[in-house]
Image 1 (cartoon, rainbow, N blue to C red):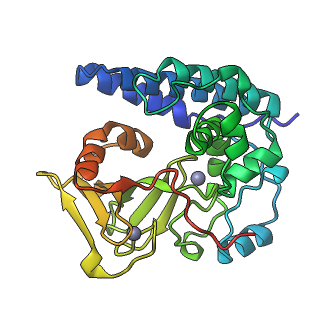
Image 2: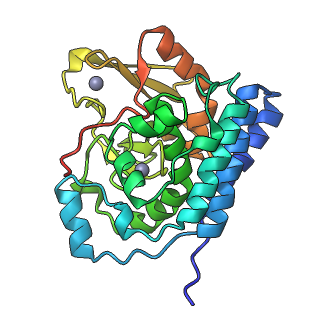
Length: 292
Ligand SMILES: [Zn+2]
Ligand SMILES: [Zn+2]
């Protein structure tokens, strides 16, 4: 019988976040919400692992060259009863922490939609889940976030499975080659400072131009800029055309292992700084693809 490889993407983030909270004596409702969320996702990853991907290499190469992200739910082996169980758990969690989150206060946790390959695909394609959201008394963007966080631990396994089969040079787009979500973080690599983006959903990393906005593809240098912290470790890239921002870490300035998805969470002060400057996050802001 096929036994999936271990996927510990999220359990590593949990460990890092717990250590960070201890060291920095950081305790907030939002941090404990994040830990509870990540623990539910780590449990899913421990069940699903890294799945086998049966797609032929020619099809993967073809989709990459044509700007089509790789994950299609009808082709993936998703345990939908586990997905629905997870969605319902997350609904209860979000409601429970609605004091620390924007929205979700009125969420009807018993009115969550039945999640299947069709609905998940609609979310992946960026469709607005209006009817489902209305029924559960939340905004469509909030329903999208719930589905995003539910599918995340399933997709992190596929990201690891696809990673070895992707030719980085053939993508270079602003959205994730695996799940088409927006990046929530980026890094400049150690060797030559090339910029990689990190997916807000599946944690996939992909190569992207340094002087290009991943959200609107603005390349006008006058409308693109970044700020750094005193040590030059972190960067805040901003685009004055679409008013979005992207956080980054310069790995040429760090030592030891850096967990990028953890960095995306613990650099919340950069998000605050960006918002104060009038920029918004690209997360859950769906980038147009050439798909369909
Ligand atoms: Zn992704
Ligand atoms: Zn832009």
